[in-house]
Amino acid sequence: MPRPVIELQDVSLCYRLAKQRIPSFKEYALHWMRGALTYEQLWALRGVNLKVERGESLGIVGRNGAGKSTLLKVISRVLPATTGRVAVRGRVAPILELGTGFDYELTGQENVFLNALLLGHSRREIEQRFDAIHEFSGLGDFIRSPIRNYSSGMLARLAFSILTAWTPEVLVLDESLAVGDVHFVKKCEERIDLLRGQGTTLLLVSHLAEAVRAHCHRCVWLDGGRIRADGRPDEILALYEGGEATIGVGSSGTTVSA
Amino acid sequence: MTRLYEHGDLIWFLVMRDLRVRYRRSTLGLLWTMLQPLIMMLVLHVVFSHVFRFELYRYPVYALAGILFWNFFQQSIVASMNSLRGNAGILQKLPVPKAVFPVATVISGVVNLCLALVPLFAILIATGHPLEPALLFLPVSIILAALFTLGAGLLLSPLAVFFSDVVELVGVVLMLLMYLTPIFYPMAIVPEQYRWLVRFNPIRSVLEVFRDPIYYGKIPPLPHLGVTVVIALMALLIGALAFRRSSDRIPFYI
Image (tube, rainbow over all chains, first blue to last red; front, top):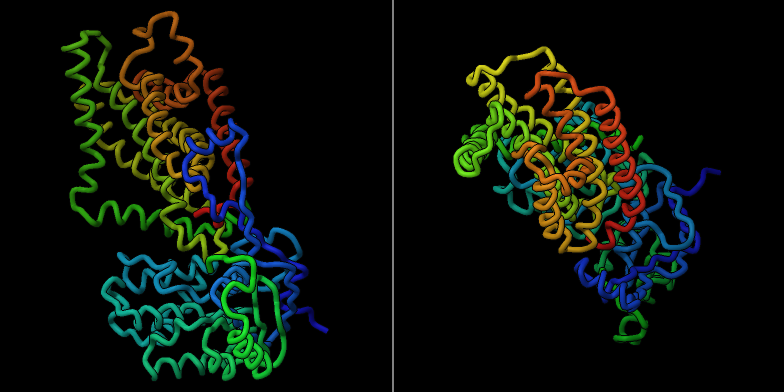
C-alpha cells in the first residue's frame, strides 16, 4: 500500500500580526519598550486533516477567505504550519498567478530558464527539455522576444508549458488557464490527462463548480479554515452551493485574506 | 546551506541577470562602474590635498582602493535588503530557499568590484605605483570581504522585510560607519582619544586586508590577517544563523 502523496494531520496555520502589523522598526521599538506589543491572531487553517493518494484529483472549493490559498501554500511548502504535521512526498508544481516567477525584461527563452530554475530544476534538465517546452507553448519566434510584449494568453501558455514539461507528483491548478484560447485549453487538458495517467495528483482550486465536476474525483469544501465536507464532487458541490445560500455572510468568526 | 548548493544554477542565473540588467540597459553601464570611483577619487584628491591639506603619499591610490571597497560593501548591503522584497511574488508562491537572493546579490557585487579593479590598475600604472607580486593576494582579500558582506546582508535582509524603515535606518548607520572607517583619510589624522573607535571597527580590518596589497604592495601581516579571517567567518555565521531563524517568517510579512 503506497503512502499518500499529501498527508496533513491536524494542521493549523496562524497569521500573527496579520491585521495590526507594525510596519516600522521605530514603532516596534516604541511598542516594545512600553510592553505594548499585542498580536492579533488569525487562524487561516484549523485542524485540517487531509490525505490525498497518488493519482487522485481533488477539487477544493470555498468562499474567499476560507483558507484555500493558505492550504495550497502549506502543501507547496511555502508556509510552514503553525501546528500539526505536513508530509508531501514529491515535487509540487504550483500554477502561478500570471507573471509570478517571470521577469518582464527577459525574453521568453530566458524566462523558461528562470522559471524552471525557480521550480527547482537544474540547468541541464532545462536544456534537455527546452525544445519540448518551446514547441508545446506554440510561441514560435516570439520565444526570443521580451515577454513584456506578450499577451496574457501567451504568458499563460509559456507558464503552463514550463510547469508541465516534467511530471510533478502534485500539480496545482486554478482558473488562470482559461485565459488561453480554446485550442490551447484543449491542449492543456490533454496534457493534464497525460500527467494524471503517469500518476500525478491534481489539486484544482476553483470557484467554478463545472470545472471541479469535470476534472475531479473528489472534492473538499473549506470553510473558515476547516474542512467542512469531503467526498464526491456532486455531493459536496450540492452542499456547498446550498450552504452558501443559507449561511450568508459572517457565519465564521474569522476573515482571512486569500 | 546544502539546499543552497543544490540551487547553484539558479544563483548563477540571478547573478547573470543582475549583471545583464546593469550593463545591457545602458552602454554607459560598464563605463559608469569604472568611472564613478575615479570621479570620486578626483574629488577627494582635490578636497584633501588642496582644502584640508594633509599629505599622504600617493593619496589617489589610497583613496581609490578605499572607495572600491566601500562601494562594494555598501551597495551589496543595500541591494541584499531589497533583494527579498523585490522578489516578493516568488517568495509567496514557490518554496525556493530564500537565501539565494542575498547570495546572488553579493556575488554580482563581487563581479562589479572586479570590473572596477580595471581603472584601479590604470591609476596604479599612471601614477607609477610599483606593481608588487602582493597584488596576487587580492583574490583572497576579495573573498574575505565578500564573506563579511554576505554575513551583514543575511542579517539585515529579513529585517528589511519585517520593518520597512530598516533600509533608511541602515543607510544612516552606513554613513556613520563610513566615517569610522579610514576610507579616504589615514589613521594618523584621527585624534588620539577617538582612535580606538576606528581601530575596533571590524570593517577597517577587512578594508585593510584589501588595501594593503594595493597601496603598500605587501601581504597583510599574519596576525592582522588571522583576525580578519575570524571577523569574516563570525559575520557570516551570525548572518546565516539569523537568516535561518527568521526565514520561515519571511513569507508572512513580505
